[in-house]
Image (cartoon, rainbow, N blue to C red):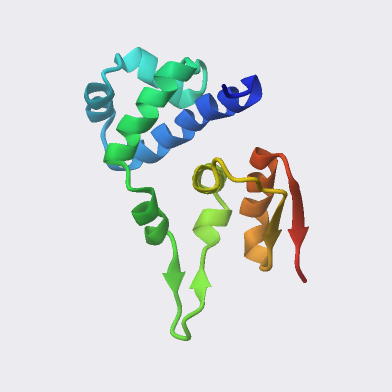
Length: 142
């Protein structure tokens, strides 16, 4: 059984996923696909109301069917002529920071994590959110 705090964070994550899905799907498409009335969808997207934990699980599964998080992340990263990448669009948008941190949380689910380590300055924002979600300390290597 999840703790109440984790359940709440999970339910809040749906708001972020809906925002991402709305970038590539119309409001009507989302409403039809998720089987939500437009007023309920609007309330969820704006965070005025959160879905129940059970509904959030169902919405998550459906949203993952129509949203390729990895591909969306790749679209927001660009490389210069020397091979360095610019992830400014990711680290400057709080929605994407939360999406990335939840993605990392999902990848480490069921494992015992005691610290989050980051070596790059650009990694600090997302690492901070990941360590917060995992409720562990953050270590920044200089």
